[in-house]
Image (tube, rainbow over all chains, first blue to last red):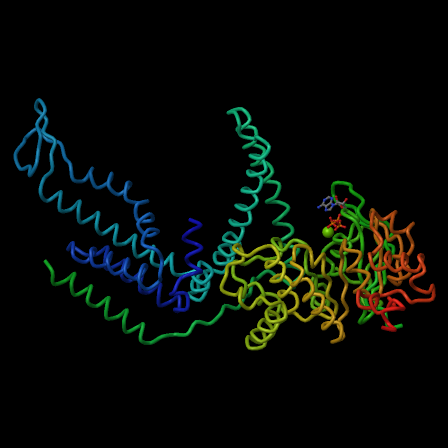
Length: 256
Length: 284
Ligand SMILES: Nc1ncnc2c1ncn2[C@@H]1O[C@H](COP(=O)(O)OP(=O)(O)OP(=O)(O)O)[C@@H](O)[C@H]1O
Ligand SMILES: [Mg+2]
């Protein structure tokens, strides 16, 4: 989580306009999800990995780790699709019969499963591309420009900031407890944990009041108005995106 | 003496939990001066500051701005806050956005300025606080001192007439705190009124035109730094220490190295200049 966030601010694609990156990621993801062939998702996966590792300069190790997170979850769901039970052993591509029940894989199911697996992985890689190259603050600004209700974007701004403030507080408290042997036994662990939560809750109240005061001191009137740094719009990128997306769509349509 | 701009009159404040944080506080801030508030932990400095732009409403007494008691109506408060800016003690409670640029632009945008003008002011504030190279970083990855500088920039960009800093140099390294003090001198020479709170007696002594010493919700004394900080009874009572410049100076006077008529040094350089060469060295 935190690693993704840090990379978002510190990669070689930060200067690219967030709209270009979002368009690229979201269009590609949609096409990937709609594809009926296996080639498109594989291409998308390669494209996004290339973008993340070569263009954005994020270590491949990190991407592998991130892709491994949904992998186990994906595998389980895919296996349940691939395998089926039946009384009649005919029609299986690969099967094993116990007593009277046959467990096995039917060929079309296998294809569906692999297809689903690749499509999901391709889509995840698109989202990682966006998350790893675009800071959340810029995405929020983008949402704001796309006329998403202010209440949602403002809440996102505050929540995003405060996740880190409280994470910091919680880490500090936990470290202090560890230093004073707060977690040596199960009993003391529970006690320390409960203290941590109550301290954190108290902090939430105090900090939110402080924040309100500090914003009021800067003439806050109920609407958070901020300026964002302008990113240069690069027309070449739009052509590039269009080129990639059109080729992917054609591939989807023509490859049967 | 220049005109009064901000004033606390018999100010009292009680926190909801019953802590009486301010007791009959009287303080005058004059236009264009550099006022330091010295006080130990819990003396009530931050509480007092919260009154200066109407964040807290006093339990008794009043705050006067340009001679008029301030109004706590919404519109009036906004007008007041355009003129009186406060940099809070804890940068984490002041920075609301993860983006440095967004956070600094918040105040000036609230003043109703045009985007270009806000841009210009943000740039200038970032230059003044040396935060330009932090712009790309999210606020949660900044160090404490860096956050502090960003929160200072957020108030500087509003260009208020009076700027109040709550322990601005706490957590800053020596170079940045020195540069910050120089920035304060620059602001002061531009005609801004500056109030700051600190525990640092040396800093308060060298920097300020006038000084107030707070202790347990009361103002023990206020006046010129040279007059107050040479009186051990006040300094002791307020849990403070005498600035090293004054201590060294009086020791030198006591032991006969300096004539008793030597003026108190305001800075290290003054003190060194006062110390005479040894006779043999001079003739050699
Ligand atoms: N929100 C609060 N609720 C109750 N009491 C408070 C609150 N904030 C501060 N106090 C109390 O009010 C008194 C004055 O606190 P204040 O924060 O003004 O001190 P300070 O001079 O700024 O101290 P420091 O140098 O530590 O920042 C203290 O006794 C403190 O415990
Ligand atoms: Mg304080």
